[in-house]
Structures are given as C-alpha cells and as structure tokens.
Amino acid sequence: MIWKRKVREDAVEPIETTPEAAPMPENAEPATTVAFRADPAVSLIETPAAPASGELFRRPAAEPGPMLPRFMASASDDVETDLANENARRRLALRDALGASQPVVAREAFAGRRDAMAALINAVEEQRVHVVIYGERGIGKTSLAHVFAETAREARYLVIYGSCGTAANFSDMFRSVCARIPRIYHASVLPNSPEAEKGDTFEVMLPDGPFGARELADVMAGVVGTRVLIILDEYDRVVDVNFRREVAELIKNLSDRAARVQLVITGVALNLDELIGYAPSIRRNITGLPMRPMSGGEVKELLRQGERAAEIRFDNAAVAMITQMAGGSPYLVRLLGHQAGILAMNDNRAVVGDADARSAVERVIAEWQASLPRRVQANLARDEARTHWPLLVAAARAGSSADGWFTVDDVYAEMGGTQSPLAIERDLKLFVNTVDLLERREGPGDPHFRFGYPGVASLLMMSAAMARLAA
Ligand SMILES: Nc1ncnc2c1ncn2[C@@H]1O[C@H](COP(=O)(O)OP(=O)(O)O)[C@@H](O)[C@H]1O
Ligand SMILES: [Mg+2]
Image (cartoon, rainbow, N blue to C red):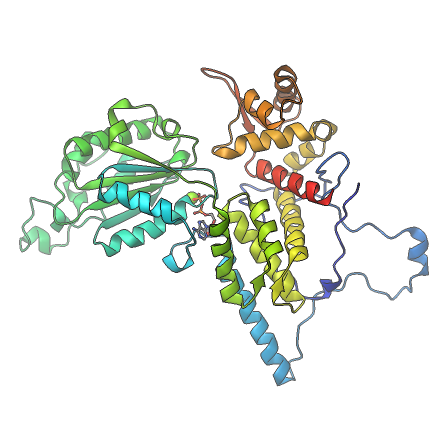
C-alpha cells in the first residue's frame, strides 16, 4: 500500500518554514532528493507524483503548477491589513511559544517537569550532594538546568552556568568559573577590606598556569556567605579523560571538606557510570537524575502554551497524534505542534485537527530526512536497508532509551522474538560493515551498536509509526 503525500490545496498560502524544523542537524550536508522508504511497501516521503501524461496534455498551458506564496491581504485595504497583521502576530506568537531551536530559559515557558525539578532542588538543598542529570538529546536537560538556575538564584545561590565543548580543559573552564565568584565571598576577605572593595574575584587566588582539582578545592573551600552552584552542561561532549578524572576528584575534595560549592552536571548518557566514570569514592556524594520522556499530561501542558499564544486549540485527536509521534521528547512536541498549528492557521482555522498533525509529521520527517548528510540518505535508500527495515526500526527503538547504544538482545526483544539472535547479529554487522549506518563498540560484555548519525533513529521510529497509521 502506498501512502502518498497529499498535494495541499493551500499551497498558495505563505507557508512558514522553520529553520529548526530539521531535528538537530549536525554538519548537515546539502540535501539531495534520495527517496526514503519507510517500509519496502510503504513510501512515506513522496513528492507529489507527476500527472499521467494524458492528463498533462489536456491541461491548458497557462495553468500554473503550485503557486508561489502571495501576501495575505492587500496593502490598500485597512481592514484586511489589520487581519493580516493579526495573523502575522499570532504566527510569531506560536513560533515563540513552540519554536524548538532554543532551550527554555524562563519558567513561564517551561512545561511540566515538576518531579524532576523537585528532585533536583531536594538533592541540592536537603542532601547537599552533587547532581548528574542524564538522558537523551532533546529530552530537556539544558532547559531544566536553566529554569533550576533561575529558581536557585531567587534563593540567593550564586549560580554559574557553563557549557562544555569538546575541547574543554579543566584549568580554563574552572578559571572562568572562579572569575565569576566575587572575592567578598571568600572567608579570608573581610567585608570592608581593600580586597573586597577592589571587586576582585576568586580567580586571583588560583595559581598561574594549569592547576588541578586539589588546588581548586583549596580555593573553593573558602566560600562563605552564599552557596555556589556550578552547572556543567553537555558534559558528555568533553573528550579529555583527564577533565573527567579531575572533576571526579573535585567532587571528592569538595565533599570531604564540606565546601559550600556544588556541581550540577548534565549529559547524554545511559547511566551515571558512563558519564562520570566508575568512581566508587564519589558515589555517595552524587545523585543521578535521569530525565524521563514527558508524560501525556506534560505534553498537553506544553501544547497549551502554543494554544494560549496563538489563540488556537489542538483537538483531542491532534494531541493524541503529537503525543504518540513525539515519544515523550519535548523537542518533537514543539516541532510537531508548531507545524500543525501553522497548517491550521494557513486554513484560517482556530482548531488544529488530526489531519494537521498528520501533515506536520510528514513535513517534519521530510525536512528531517533532507537535512541528513547525502551519504546517510543514500545508505537509507539502499536495498539492504529496505530489506531489513523492521530490523532497523527495532534497532532504533532499542537504542532510544538513552544514549543510543543497544545490544543484539535489545533488538531481539524489540522484534518480539521473530528472528534469532544470531540472524540479528549478522544483519546488524551488515550495517556496520557494508552499509555505513551503525557503529559497533567492543568492550567488556556484549558488543554494542548504535546509529552513527544523530537523528536517524528518531527519524526511523517516527516514519515507522506513521507507516503503521497509514496501513
Ligand atoms: N519542560 C519543557 N517545556 C517546554 N519546552 C521544553 C522543555 N524541556 C525542553 N523543551 C524544549 O525541547 C527542546 C530540547 O530541550 P533541551 O533542554 O535543549 O534538551 P537537551 O539539553 O536534553 O538536549 C528545546 O527546544 C526546548 O525548548
Ligand atoms: Mg542540552
């Protein structure tokens, strides 16, 4: 059965394209038009088919194809201009409410996550431990960290936020952290002393040149009059193993000395060990906070922000569709909600329905696919990929829990035992060796696999879900 993309009648309406519509492209190469098959039998992304040649000849030559976008109202007509302005305003409001390119930084824009917030506050305030927030990309770690930072600042914590890059270096990172802690918060400095008046920071107390965890803890143990929270976002990106070792050492030193400094670390990972490294000595000083997929109620709450901003309403079917397709990712909820809302507004409807949600999914899948590097698109279009489509979808699901790594057993479970583990392992290897879609990691225990390019797994899952719906 073929499920074709409907040629929309409203193509004359200006269609707002969102720069973020392609989920988190990284080094995206120019798009090509390689057909992407959701299933050997179901073509998900299909450009409108060319009309049969007979039909083509019957058409008058002047008949235009899909028209170029037009303005919505005439500039000479004030009433319509007002209407157009009003429409434009609502579109912008929808984009502000549901655009998915930025993490949330303000509490008003933050939906749900009360449990995670409560757990985070409790760990910091009651248990006085360091916290590691982990979970998959797009699940909302950075947003939680920002909104938590705002809340902590209200409680007079001194919060310093830093995003780690691949090249993060311990001394440089913490030198800049120290440069943001005023020296008046150090026990050695009296309130009206010259050092305090000079406006110095903790940085002046650090050794020149590189330093380690112990020297840093010596300085930080002197914090008085406030509590310092250091947020290290995107910790998983740091390549240098030495950085991680020093941070573990810092946690140990700060804890041993009961310093008024706590770390909040976020990163993509399956579990604590993976992010922090196995360091039993600091285990009781840290709490792991896994970020879970958003619940149905949280998804609704997030969509409600779009409803309020743009004066529209998502009907129950649309909410159900978006909830199912997003799989608990706030990122996807926003992306789909935004697109579906625009489609309804293009039709001058205030209610976003099932069909809008469906078209939004199609559009997101198409744009997502187009944003993949050419080589990945070509690999997805190969015969091997089509033949083993159920395996790839099962693999995507198996890896969706956190960081993307999965084992043969995980895929076996996802496939409901329809194939032997041996056959699964053989086929997975095909996608490591012959078709470059998976990576393989050897180590203690079973070999692990994962999709080599971010976003491919989510794309596979969404298109499989869509194909199921169409069937
Ligand atoms: N609680 C939330 N409420 C509303 N939007 C959210 C929430 N959490 C995340 N988002 C949105 O989801 C997307 C991904 O969030 P982000 O915090 O960057 O995830 P991560 O850091 O885990 O990759 C962003 O567009 C952000 O605006
Ligand atoms: Mg993040």
